[in-house]
Length: 471
Image (cartoon, rainbow, N blue to C red; front, side, top):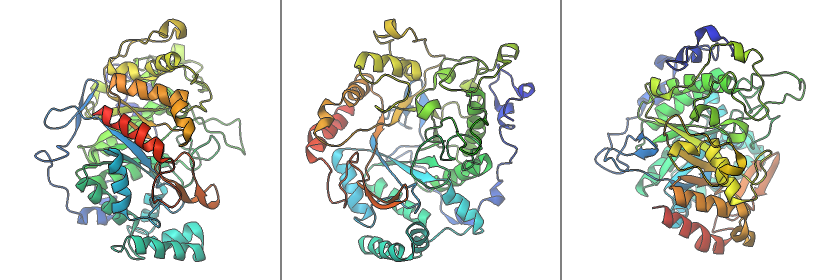
């Protein structure tokens, strides 16, 4: 379904193939719910912070003043079943963003589910209100209770305040604090992320219909036009091989050709809706690998962990992703993740981690090959310099933080190479996670009731110094 090569040419990129990546058509402007067009678009912000729109030049993200921009921030989960950012029943948006600002963070990766947009289309353009969102996620008793708690902490809201109106408020308050908001498509169906069997893993997995995904991206891109501090958005979080538990031998074309074809079509969709936005491209295997794109490899034959082989790839005309051939060539930023529980990467030694990050995509920032490339033997140069960020990583927020090998290595790597990043995560508790309600998280910066930090010493002696050293 994804491997039609008669539409592909290596010389001009793969725009033609992108049109075939899904049979579904992108919605025209008239098909987008009309509420998007009742908003006043944000005025051009080139004369005031954040001095947008942003663009890329080589390894750098630039504002309209020509200054390189660095992000250091945190993930704020909002992709759970309620589809409302976590913590609002415990603290106001103002108080939560004051906490974020107190660390020095200037960037929030705000996660969401495409289902949030699907429901708007199902309701003929009407967004879902707060109380309905909570009841659908938590049941009537707890849903109405949490709704009242959210309104008590955020008195500008009422039970009918919609999800995107809550987003509006978050973006507005964040703007007043010089914080960027980066919407991140975490999942298709709202739920805790991620594994290979959750239906959200890969294009046209059972919770990942490609047409809905592209439609949702366009919707959010239109929404972003009303907010100057929304300068970027993601395509998809942590793509991975899909395993259908009812048919485990079936395949959905898990390979580079499918990735780039769908990503190209989706970036076209975003760019047509809002050409000002940067678009972040994530990689294979839980966003650990962008090597084929960045090194200019033949997508028919480029290796990747547990990929579906294109058996006749050697006989096909080569397909090479050519970013420069696209109208959004100066709008793409690559993003990578790394966790200690990686299935296939060694996270026990800084020299090896540096070499792995280089090979996975950070060669695109023009850094020299790390010394351990002599050991890994896998450190080719990039075909083109492009910005790359680390948009997710994390560890327990306790005394072990200071001696965590991967965390220390990532801190050194970002400081030595001026790499932007966002840690996982802010949310000390979740309304619902993996079927349980009121779930705490020991990896979070925030504590359970959102009144302070999980590990205050870590914030003061680890996170704040790291952030301040980034700028």
